[in-house]
Image (cartoon, rainbow, N blue to C red):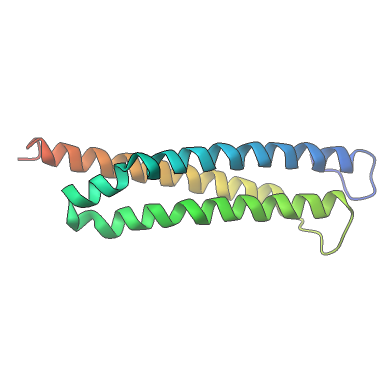
Length: 124
């Protein structure tokens, strides 16, 4: 559990969480950049122009998710320095961003599978 500010261990808790968030951001960043640099999203749009809005939404999710992890890291560091305003919902926000990533990855996988399935003519 998260200790209250000024309680023994609150700084260690926040420092540990911020380290995990930095690692999480790095993993998300590398994962998203891999998707973008390999061109898989662009290939989907070229092969399936009607899917363009959904692919673009997934691409926009990348920056939104990374931005939220950065904001969480900042709030955690502020907490560790005992600065106001304290965000009492750090865990809830982290759970929300992890759930959002899970939903994003599921949507991405489902879209790719649906388009490949259609391309192979298996939808007929």
